[in-house]
Amino acid sequence: MSKALRIITQVLFLYLFALLGNFLVKQLHLPISGSILGLFIVLGLLHFKVLKLSMVELGASFLTSEMLLFFIPSAVAIIQYKTEILQHGSQFLIVILLSTVTVMAVTGLVAQFALRRLANKKGEIGQ
Amino acid sequence: MIAFICILLTIAVYVLSKCVYKRMRFALLSPLLIAPCILSLMLVGVHIDYSDYDKGGRWLSNLLQPAVVGFAVPLYKFRKVMKKYAKIIAISMSTGVFIAILSSGVFSHIVHLNDSYLLSLLPRSITTPIAMAVSVDIGGMPTMTAIFVIVTGITGLILGPAIIRSMHIQEKLAKGLLLGMGAHGAGTSKALEFGSEEGAAASLAMVLAAIITLVFAPILTPLILL
Figure 1 (cartoon, rainbow over the protein chains, first blue to last red):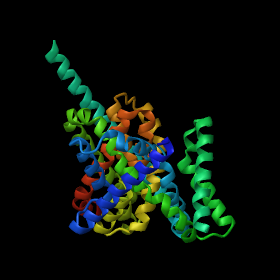
Figure 2: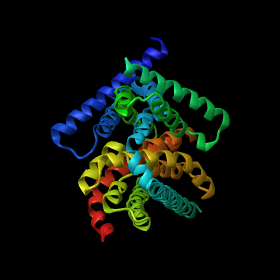
Figure 3: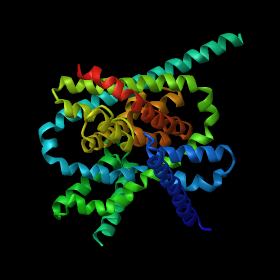
């Protein structure tokens, strides 16, 4: 099978798991999204060797590396909100900018601090 | 017919802006910022309604679902690393979610946004479907939340690498977590550019951020509205 064809089949295969996730979420009234449930299903199937990595790897890496393309239509959707943007656009932007910087910096620093402490502890034990 | 043209046009503009970005390597030229700007100008220029554009656009947006499922692959590959650092990941992500909700609320207060905008901003750092669900849950406007989520993605994608540099974040796990926490899927795609371990950490962060927010947001919301 050519590479392109394999990517397409694997993308459709992954899509099936998203649909399965959507279905289960609806039936069982779960609060999470179908695609996240689908992710866990695939993870479980890989873990229990029901699925082989080679059955999904090409499709998954195609989808995740071109993911920005799939965000573009939702970004274009902003043009529908002209009045809100004209009225409050700068306020929205300030909140999102400052908050995103804060979140990223804090998360990164906490993780780095914890990782280094763990590494130091292990180092002491090793001595 | 118009739907099909819109899909092709979106892909063409995306591929083109990706080429430009690869050549210039300038963060503000990210395809997620440039391509929507070009497409919006085109739509306005030729008087096509967004609803007509979205008949095609929807097909591309829908591919986000299998893409999220696809993050199972990096997660699976690095499951041992993720398991080993489970405690650190849990601490970092809980802190991240707490700060995300709190800082969105505090900054909204500071710039005097009304409560319904404030509530719509609270879940902005997680993946769209769950962010919209949380928004409904806490009394926000889900369509505005969807916009804030995408703007957060663009912001995080552009600023993430600069934050990593200026804060001297060196650990791969920390880089991935901050990108996935701060900018959901968009950040995760940036993390994959750094490397597959960063990508795996970001995938996990994206998923955990969504789940933790689902639990935390309704609890924190009354405190923020005080």
